[in-house]
Amino acid sequence: MSGFNREADEEVARGARAIVVSAETQGGDRRSSEARLEEAGGLALAIGIDVQASQSFRVRDRKPATLFGSGQVEAIAALAQDHEAELVIVDNALSPVQQSNLEKATKAKVIDRTGLILEIFGERAATNEGRLQVELAHLDYQAGRLVRSWTHLERQRGGFGFLGGPGETQIEADRRMIRDRMAKIRRELEQVTRTRGLHRARRQKAPWPIIALVGYTNAGKSTLFNRMTGADVMAENLLFATLDPTMRQVALPGLDKAILSDTVGFVSDLPTQLIAAFRATLEEVLSADLIVHVRDIAHPDTEAQRADVLEVLEELGVIGEGVDPAAAVPMLEAWNKLDLLDEEAAIHAHEVASRQDNVVLVSALTGEGIDLLQRQISATLTAGADVHVLTLDPADGAALAWLHEHGEVLDSTLQEEGLHVEARLSQSAYARFRARAA
Ligand SMILES: Nc1nc2c(ncn2[C@@H]2O[C@H](COP(=O)(O)OP(=O)(O)OP(=O)(O)O)[C@@H](O)[C@H]2O)c(=O)[nH]1
Ligand SMILES: [Mg+2]
Image (cartoon, rainbow, N blue to C red; front, side, top):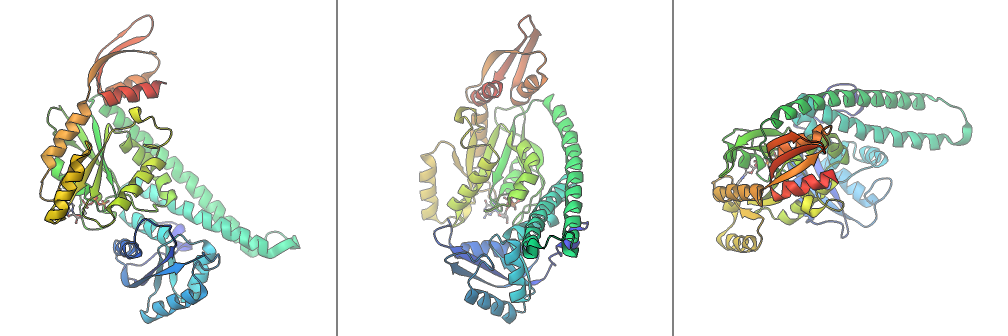
């Protein structure tokens, strides 16, 4: 990323020596502290940071000034010194005050989990849109920090009543600059989204169902995508290997044509700024006809990861309260990395999966179960497909476009009561169309 924002918040250098610490609060977590630390280490590795040591600390109540207790802060400072760390990664969310106090205590640069994830996304963003989205998220993150330290200064100044001290002027100027830049990026993003809207309109002429792969980072989405489409997108043992969505045609039994889309992985505590910035991209992907939730079934935290993914999907309004289950986008779970399970675990997984009709066990690596997954995808997409005769408002071009995108429009004639459309729709598409019209 370029621009002034980098000067305000120095870049984290590749190869920087770092330690990772986390504050473990009681009962607040779905996964073990080791697993969390390991994941944080993986995130750091994703941008080439040289992690020397990691440790988690039990924190009974979060200290507003430093998050950690004073003895713990000393221990962290000693750990940083022992390892000559120039960077301390705190795998929690830090307030600006906590961050700056910890920097003073450790004499190292301190970044929190959100900052780290933003760094990774900043480095990975390859398309113009991706770069804009990440910069927007980063600015949003910084703006929050400036606002808070500004009120903090204001309070310090107390009731003296003189305005425009040097600090305040600087921060106000920074704030204005950030606001202006954010507005500019939003406009640019709108432009990009409009252009993409055109692409989408073009695609509507060829009404193919879209299948979206979603899942936790490193679950194997890109590997599965490559396996099913014969594509060659980057698939690596690296967190957030994929950032920009990719779409490819895919051959499925009994279907003329379908589009498969690979997209950014999720992670626990995905910064809200990032979800907001990526909403446009994700929404397009998630307006799919079918979501395949790819899970790393061999990962010790597979259940926690599943819950994290569902949480993000809920935040995006794909599932959860307010979404009529009948009108929700159908979802399948692909339990991936089957090859990594030992025999006993594999038998157990098969047993559990066989009791659910929306689970398929696969190995994207060996290809096992892929044919089954493809058949299941076809079956779900065509389930209960029926020809419906619908009457549309002739002025409602969007409704007709929707039918083209999610079903097969067989005939349309303009009549007195409106536009009569004959369309073949799957059960789920029909339910979604009715929910949309209501
Ligand atoms: N053993 C095994 N490894 C797999 C399988 N599928 C994927 N992998 C490995 O898991 C790692 C991550 O795979 P990706 O396909 O990049 O995962 P992703 O979900 O696209 O990850 P992000 O793009 O980072 O969100 C790679 O090292 C893959 O080789 C599988 O079925 N078995
Ligand atoms: Mg990927």
